[in-house]
Amino acid sequence: MQLDFTNIFNSSCDAVDVDYSLSLEDFEYGTYKPLKDGAKVKGRAYSRADVAHLDLNISFDFYGICDRCADEFKRAYSFDISKIVVESLENELDDDGYAITENKILDIDDLVYQEIQLFLPHKMLCSDDCKGLCTKCGTNLNREECNCKKDVDPRLEALLQLLD
Image (cartoon, rainbow, N blue to C red; front, top):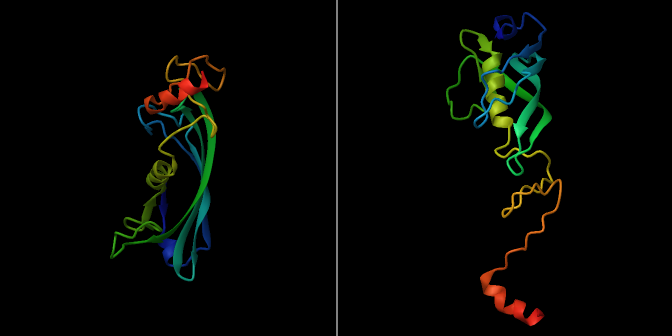
């Protein structure tokens, strides 16, 4: 979706509502495409004190594979972004809080795509307390306990003899 900010920059309109679904079929996370249902984008663009603002809420379902236990999972995410919309920046090193338009038109799809990439964590877990897999037998420790004998640090093996 492209949003024309001409009237907002001129303060000739109060606000423009944004409410649409964005298809993210080509979005890749690692080696798979986890956003099967796309993203829901809601918000508004407005001018306050002759400054153009864009506030959005982005929500989506993430279909992933846990990095610890390799189980498939589905998790709902939602986050807000708030940007000041400008036509250009003199110092583009500090553009975190700004969205730059091209000919007073902002490509919201591109902005949402970038924000989702920045929002997602580097490690995806099925739950915060995921126990992962046993390093010896490969048992999923979330479902059952394994009977593998725990490794002992070779520097401490002499102390085990005291317990016998």
